[in-house]
Length: 156
Image 1 (cartoon, rainbow, N blue to C red):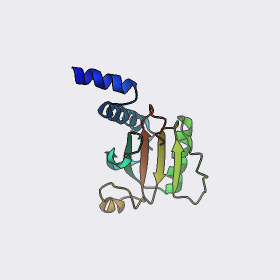
Image 2 (tube, rainbow, N blue to C red):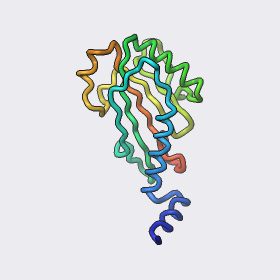
Image 3 (cartoon, rainbow, N blue to C red):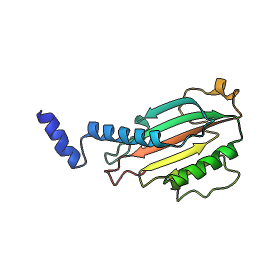
């Protein structure tokens, strides 16, 4: 009981890592649930990692990686996402200038949530997608980075 009370006091002061981690995971899950997905997209793999976002200053974050396959060009998929994301409150990341030849795009929702769409993510930690690639014209990955909204030192 004393430990729970101490954790509640620390949480109110911005501390208590277990509760912060739980809150960040819940926030990332809410973003994931509300995220637009094209009707023809087939879910290939999904992971969630908090170890990838070990920040300084007690910052907590979650990285969600989701791979989809579709049977149409990536340019159509990324344009569909662009329209849907802007309509649901996302904006292009301020540091990103879109180019028609890009095989990726960066979006932001508030200061703590970033989203990346990428058709060539060789560095993604998802299980190998090679067997699935042959069934689809396009395989792409959505990366969501969600950081602790209560910590001003956390930057998505």
